[in-house]
Length: 208
Image (tube, rainbow, N blue to C red; front, side, top):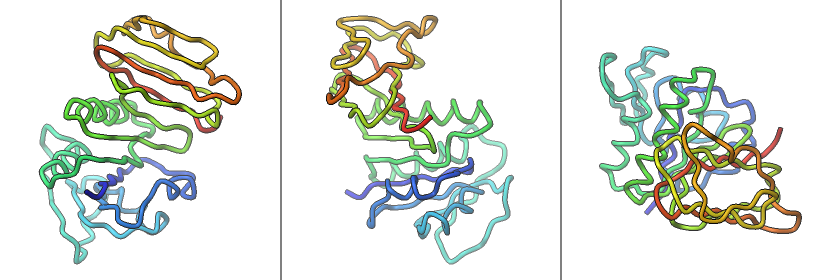
């Protein structure tokens, strides 16, 4: 099954960095003004969705779903749900981390929605990669200067971190005490993160 790449309207400053994540057979959904990123990403839209409150409907010869402006789902959430309906189980989200903190947090919560369905999902921006981590071990190479484990999804237990400056074993991180910020992979190693019950947000920092 091909991967679905969903592109939002937040700024992308480093297109070369973003392009390294792309595959030739990706299915691209561009959300509203996110379509402005298509030329710089070298990507042709497979589907366009949006209420077009931040851009004008380009009316291209591409399948386009026009949404009402008053709705529960953001354009990005709608795009994810539409992709799920079409059978996609692997997701990459670009252009979804921006200056609007409310939209950013809403988009990060998409990782939990996809995690709960057993799907693979990654958010990449100019500085980091983000994913939900649960009971399947995730490795972090030492090419990432820092990584953080954040609890924004609810109760989690049985947290373990190996091969890192600050290891953990059978620990718990609560929403009101985020002590899992800014860890480091041991030189020449790959850190390993696992959560027995629940899930955490893993943020891998690519550059400072």
